[in-house]
Length: 145
Image (cartoon, rainbow, N blue to C red; front, side, top):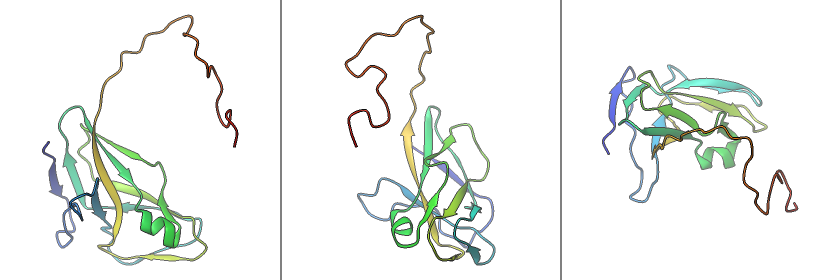
């Protein structure tokens, strides 16, 4: 699978890349113009400076970085975010600080990861009745805590 990447600005930042041979996702970099203070509870839209072209029937999922979440409480809203194959605009991530201290986001910091997946289109068929299963309509916590 080939994904085309276009730098929209921030030509000084690295392109997304896999950081290890076993990495599932490529890292995205914060293309902020200057340091950005994110207060506890605050959410901000962070540009990455890139756009991509995916093959038809693929998506890119944008996910948080585990180290930022564990150490600082920094994560992404709308996770995973979906980049559709026909979107050609700049990839931006919605960052929220769930920690108890202000976080300073620096230009070029790895802020998120992007994973590529094939998408299957479902045929949606309206019916009067669904088949029964052992679970039935049991939801949230139905098997215990």
